[in-house]
Picture 1 (tube, rainbow, N blue to C red):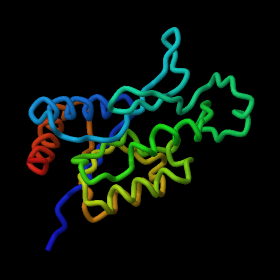
Picture 2: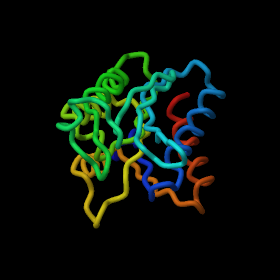
Picture 3: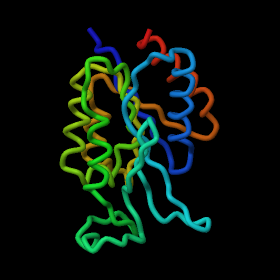
Picture 4: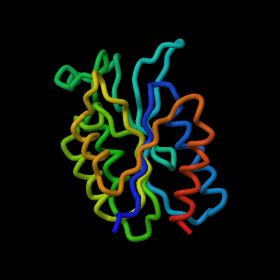
Length: 190
């Protein structure tokens, strides 16, 4: 017997609209079912003068914390891991993201935007993601496309999870993907 899909992974090229798609699906779900209990976070760009200078984590209730920056003022930042030109503030990320991944009985859906290279620098993050998967609560997450044909090991593990369904987002299929994922989640959450 097949395991029902509980892990919905949205992937696609940078800038294709993965975060926007997930945010739109959440808005639609909340408007049709205002009592849904949804936990998780988004990753949002920080821009200055039209240039991307970093990323922050944003919880679904609007709290924010730095994730990565090119302009870190912390004296500790010299020891932080780097992804490209960005220094990743693992402690800041963990302080906000990890509590959002605590499995609670009343939670209906988890949202993680994203499970990517910056986030997996936290040794505590991926084990928390695995606990969400083990909870059998639906998970909607974004993942990066493989670089040079190779996935980040944590992303490969998610993709190979027996309950995973992968949605490859493109500019031409965004509306169809939004409708398809929304329908699947709405059917699970009733």
